Amino acid sequence: MDRIAVGLAALGRPAYINLGRDLPEVRDVPSMRTATHEVLDAAYAAGIRWVDVARSYGRSEEFLGGWLAERGHQDVTVSSKWGYRYVGDWRLDADVHEVKEHTLPRFREQWAQTRELLADHVHLYQVHSLTVDSPLLTDRPLIDALAGLSAEGVEVGFSTSGPAQADVVRRAFELESAGQPVFASVQSTWNVFEPSSGPALAEAKAAGKRVLVKETLANGRLVAEAPEPLRRIAEAHGVGPDAIAVAAVLGQEWAPVAVLGPSSPAQLAANLAATRVRLGDGDRAVLGELAQDAREYWTRRSHLGWS
Image (tube, rainbow, N blue to C red):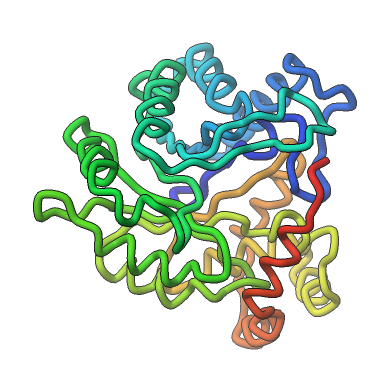
């Protein structure tokens, strides 16, 4: 399971844009903490040793930190992200759930908060949703501050979103501080609906960078709205459409780590059926035809409701 991580975007807060979440009937803090710990226990039992969180994922860092302290696990790789602040006040009907700010003060503030909750467990700290218009790309003091994390033994990375992900990947990996590359890893959206970042991610992998893939199920759309060709392939392999979508990620030649976002142990088990799937050339050809125009994909994603 060294190429699979569990992300807590759907569990650290009561509302998210994922379709088909399997959550407690009551989404108060104790219930969501329990649900998070159940997924983490199931993931650990399955051999998964990587957990991905973020400052904006509500109480995800708090829930994870508590789980690590209670279980005493020392072999879990933790990645987190800064750049968004959760402002949803634990409400399903909040007008705004998160606010983005890529500035030096925000980085310093959120890194301190992450360290307080996760102590020395953080192996990778990532800029959350870097885009082509982010001021970070030209903010020298911020770039140097990020590079300074390496001296603390923390790997520095970034995640990407939007139709220009490939451009962001290439630009970000060009950034240097004191003659050294700033970033060692990238976490991008890639799925059978939105594979446009693939070539840039392959280049990054070839250059020795760590590559993670998020939104492997297109925020649940590849399950709740699974197209008929995907369903047929799933039926032929005796698994659900989610397993085929994850298998498509794991089957990429650039060998990414697939970040899964299950909200229950049952969903995790269904996702992990991907490890038993071997897609044939015909399967890959059919899945390749499901690719959508990147701008259309991201427009559709921007209209998903928080629930």
